[in-house]
Image 1 (spheres, rainbow, N blue to C red):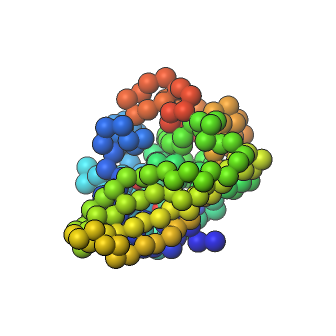
Image 2: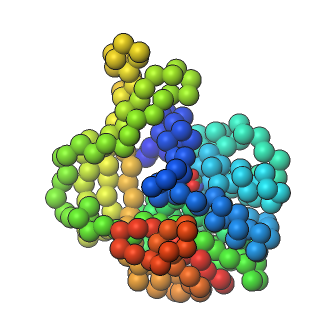
Length: 258
Ligand SMILES: C[S@@+](CC[C@H](N)C(=O)[O-])C[C@H]1O[C@@H](n2cnc3c(N)ncnc32)[C@H](O)[C@@H]1O
């Protein structure tokens, strides 16, 4: 099944207007946090799951050499349109890649790691990270800390709104909601059916898309063991990009050394 970023369409076209990192967003402050680390380690920087370049573009604009890897040709095309010197984009799978060089900083921002659906794939990704990390380099990965009430086995029929955005080209309003969510606590994965509904100025529905998103949740101590098993040494874990202590239901932001 091709999930939302692999398929293209509104999930890609609206990504930059939807994920702005404003107050209360799970990525609030992440770009500044990554910039601070890049200043400490120096470049080159590798971003896995680079998407539209939300993080990679400001890093490259700050003067760092950045390589961004992503599975989705649509997300990469959106990043490529920004045409930023110093940013190289590569199509590849973060679960198995060999770029033949090392990096001082490797990032997996905004839960992209959770697109890897099995511990085997996750482990393989972290081992690739370790092989690409320069001596004294750093690896930072951000995932969500699972809220258990959202992980229960029953099928969730309740509609969950994901907000409203304005289409950057048509100017129409687009309502995003989740129509169906199924959790599988056995594999620690969930699948969601996303609906994007576009309405014109008169309020008529002019387009409606369905997309699927599936992610794996990982518990904090599981992640710590996974990192250590892969030869990565966690030196800090934060609950947000202000550097707060880890807390239940917040983010898990791991900073590691090789
Ligand atoms: C939520 S977006 C994050 C994009 C960007 N890093 C950011 O912070 O805005 C997740 C990205 O991970 C990519 N992705 C998912 N699975 C991947 C894989 N196995 N290898 C590489 N990229 C992957 C998706 O195509 C998507 O662009």
